[in-house]
Image (cartoon, rainbow, N blue to C red; front, side):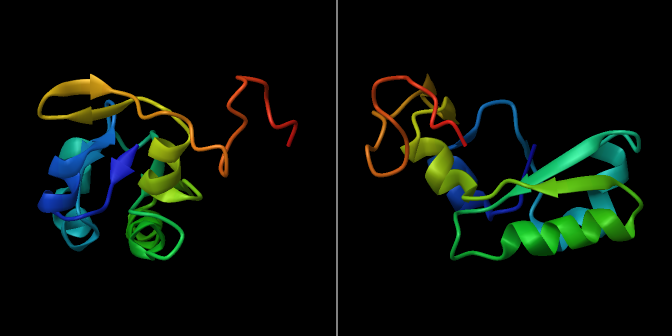
Length: 108
């Protein structure tokens, strides 16, 4: 997973294990950080941000297999998935407007 947001956003929290690579730096740095045979999943803040789309386009131009994480980091965190900060890995409580709080799958 590649976080295409700026440093300040990354520092607030990011997907555990993600690589920080702002979309403006992908053309210059991707090949030194991401294996060419990897399937790259890009994300940014959320549905209102197009940074993941711009990042996906840059990776596609370089010949990578690429996907976008729909919902971005906002929904990752709101659905209770692990996020990493300077303090370590944490989870937020599940937001009932985004995912079932019972732990049951949404069946989608």
